Length: 76
Picture 1 (tube, one colour):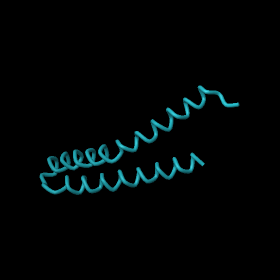
Picture 2: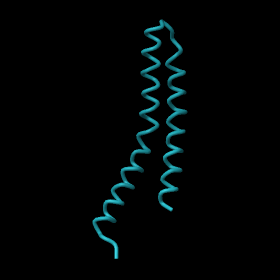
Picture 3: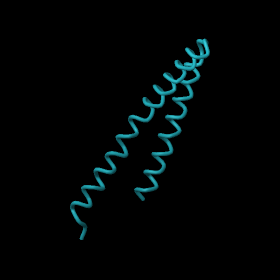
Picture 4: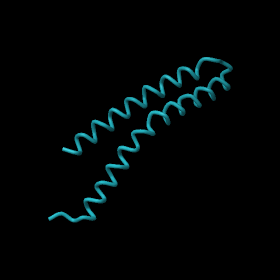
């Protein structure tokens, strides 16, 4: 017989894991954008923010895929 509080804590952990997926891509895109803007200001350029934006999007998608694969493996 399983403990109801244990089932509840597992549900909360799953909810936290899946809600984190919705924040990964926007956070990484914004971080890449702002770091690119800082580098643009520092280096007196006008294009690095685009590279940071693209790099942030790629990193966000890769991290989201890694987390999704890990959560699928943990659920089995």
